[in-house]
Length: 345
Image (tube, rainbow, N blue to C red; front, top):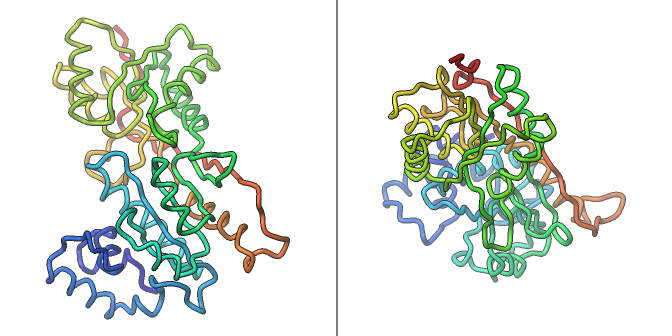
């Protein structure tokens, strides 16, 4: 059965690009040659017969929409590509059709006519965006961030479990001076991104639980490689002491910290260990040596699809669920070579 991943491997284009072309996204600026190659590949791989992107197929048990809101523009394509690949894998194996929706671009009336069973809303959404989504369908599952857990279904990572894994892993190597590097402020929007905006609070709580409250160290930085590097450089050059290990809130924070530390003549992990919360493909070159706490996107997608099914009359035998539900998926620790025993001075 052909999937978007198959077409991506066949053509060399990203899954996000292929999805937007197949869905006739008017904001997509691909060349005519690119469009032709993608459509030809879809036909050759029999993609159109295995999954319908234009509404319900009689062979499909559910029809869902997928909408994104990436708060970091430079990560948008990669963010969407990672999630689209997981969604396509889950939906292809479960006889579920899906269509990508672009806020403010896709036609609300056309989407309503498709009679979607529900919508997966992935990322951090503002209130006007949420209202736009609800004009299409009220069966919405928010993923990666909580919109309003009193009223909406939500699937998020269990950041507390991730932080516990991070600190336990560092303690196994003998670290006690464990710091946090990343966003420490609150985001002014309707939703809360659990991965970064409250992660420093989770770090505080975990350090106290592990009896390390007197070792707490935090340095605030934006989720940006260049800004993270500058922040860390300024801190080191001011003569301040670093912890023996740092938990970075994101891949960008981790890479910026590593650049700054190495520029100051220190090494990773011989002088300082680095561990990062990461929601980006671990096969990327810059992450191959980085120990990460990685979210399990595919399990999150499976959980979200099940939540949509629980609110779809044709899919339930015990009655439709009307109360909202929150599902927390634990992340996993991927141990690589950026963590070692603390250096003895």
